[in-house]
Length: 566
Image (spheres, rainbow, N blue to C red):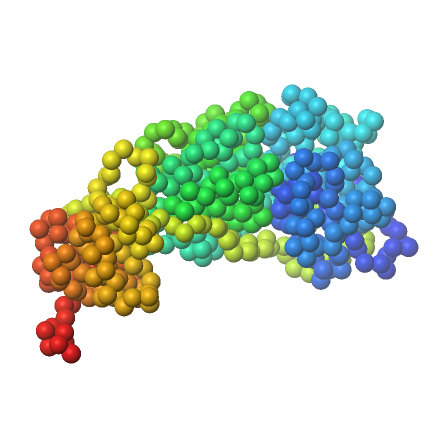
């Protein structure tokens, strides 16, 4: 069986030769819309191609699509207008038999990592994967698409079983989404910074597909539990939800359910953009049997499944094999220990053999698709002005809340340094891990602040001068041992319970970027030093602080009596 099949060529049409080439992109949901944006840039305006969009009605998840396409500066046509106009090429990333009303040729591509899900609502049976079923591909026995794009040749055998008449229309074109992510790998450090994964922090990308077996439906509390279980100086957690979840729950509903997690530091990736950059930036992927987890494993990220929906998957598909073979995360177990073990024991080849069954034509999709499109356009298409190159992703814009205002801190003296870990305070946890440290936003009168041993103001230019604020905080918080007022990124004013006032400055290491010194990390480290019986002045060569993977040397300077008299 050949790897690539011939596509029907458009016959020459002398009456249209001098007119601009017009291409229509068809979307049924947000997932197919974002996939089209990976594909249609291959048809360049410089080569005389104009692109239009339309929404194929009938999907449960088509709300807001026209507005989304308009925000991409695309020309959006109504479905009625799109069916009345003649286009030189029509491209869709989701199939429905109603697309027979559009002009030809029609190319249909997958909108996920291949064809995997059993969706009786669209396929009409319990054995055909969505996108490969007779109900979707045929109308009165005739095949609707002119070309059925497959990401890998393994899908040829499944199409031959599910819809034999469509097999001659199949063509293996690779996976443009996966290829685009691979082409953007060089932007990894840039994307990591936008997610806050700096200073050695590991980025955990939590993701969920849709449906009753998805992570978000089976373990809706996991985003909050995960962000509270991980030290903030070691991990950043971002969450990606399938667009259908946003459609079912509404933007308001999703944000309301994740508000507590966002306020604890969770980054929420909006469905329009950011999940691909998140996968590029990620160190660990926690999810279910959705395309995001599958792509994560394909990019060799350490991947764990917290939910698995094999019952919803074609048992012959690579996604089903992925669900059966991927390592598991126990949502009720020790989350931190499981993530550390996942990175320690990660072997990319363990899942590589499975992901290659759907992503086995890497870095060739753009060339294969451009070749296909120009073949279908016929003699009117100009040769491409340059070799296709996947576009760079826009900067992700993960949304978070105000961040934690109270921390549970543990640590002590280890190898000549103060090593600490701070966790967002979990009010449901019975007992503290160590001692409490709060920021000024917590408010001095709260029950948490009243038992805290460290208090910090992060704004260098607050209402009260730094020294006055420190005095006020000690007066208001009876258990306080250390208070810190920020003076800048790497310089802070520190006060102890006995009235000692010190200025702390982070040392600039040779060959390293300018140091950042979190005032709460400083206050917590000084409190741990006091617990070990050592005052800040007892570190004449500086206090080494280790938080996560970062090590900072801090020097202390007191104010002389003469200066104080001034």
